[in-house]
Length: 87
Image 1 (cartoon, helix red, strand yellow):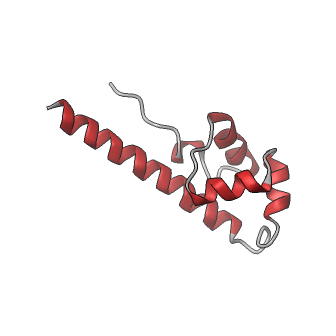
Image 2 (cartoon, one colour):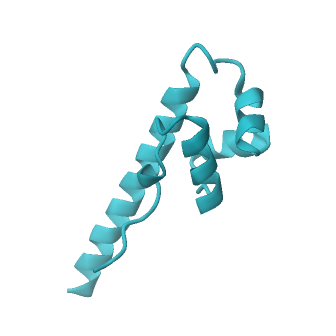
């Protein structure tokens, strides 16, 4: 029983993570940021290397997710990453 619950939660977390990455990548492909990832990273307060890692699948910290949400005007919302709480 708990195995099924754990699997369902793991799938949900993976889906959320994938949604976060996809939204971030789509945002950075917009003409304003294309080839300016260094500027976006500076706006968020992270290194360009860290931004590349996030795009490749690294987990953002809550602070990073919050800063990205703010820097994108909510187009890459924190809710795309933050895990649901178990009830």
